[in-house]
Image 1: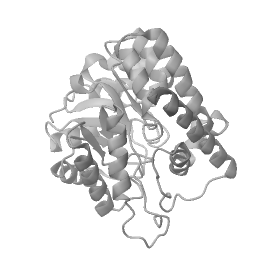
Image 2 (image 1 turned 180 degrees about the vertical axis):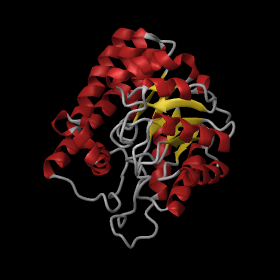
Image 3 (image 1 turned 90 degrees about the horizontal axis):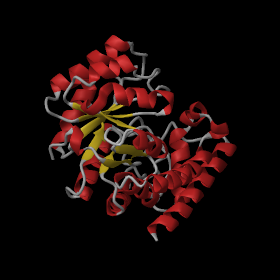
Image 4 (image 1 turned 135 degrees about the horizontal axis):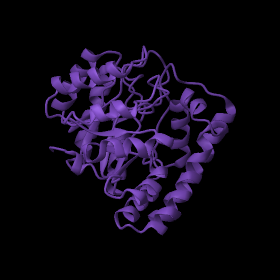
Length: 320
């Protein structure tokens, strides 16, 4: 598929990487539960998720070996069977490894790449622009979705940098963390780049800017794709009262996974929290997390379990 900004519409579902029962052991060399991964992809695409994105934070890009990451992306590509575009996560600690991974995964059938910044050191505005320009030069005509997470990457991409990145034709979208900067960043890039809000933030900004806010991202599609697809359909129909109603339910479902309502505390344990909420939701079996991200405070686990139960409730309601 040759995916453009105009094609990036609907729900971009970011999926976990299901793990084998022994994935929590350091000596395990192959931790991908391939049958469960293929079943997961079939479930989310069958539910109406439009775009599949892999190997982000809770997809455990940081804990998979390079052979495992290749195997998982190839499995996802085969399981989608061209029913949806696949954007493979390729973030590493440097530019050259990121480019090399992207080239390999594209040969395996990925339609584009999902790529954050190197995390070892913070990067200033000039470094961020150069980094993405280098990727675009190395990967001409390859659609790139950038990953903007101010906690993981030690700083938010500024609005001024977004204006510069919007001039790079390979960059078609950004996974945005939302908040007060969301609308300003969306207006700054206009139609040149698709700014993706988190699903519970999509409805309000789409109601104000329906021609710009045409897609969202969600890490909950492997918990409950039905309500997330339902809000997408309401927004596409510009049924704003219905979109507002579903949005409140999405916020309710996600609230317990944020300890004390704080994103920063969640990010400290996001991989472990994800495994618990996916397991509790019951749609897939995520298996255990991989080392070194194995333990978390008991109260965080309780919140993750409650989040999963709420997603189960919404999945039953909207799937019906």
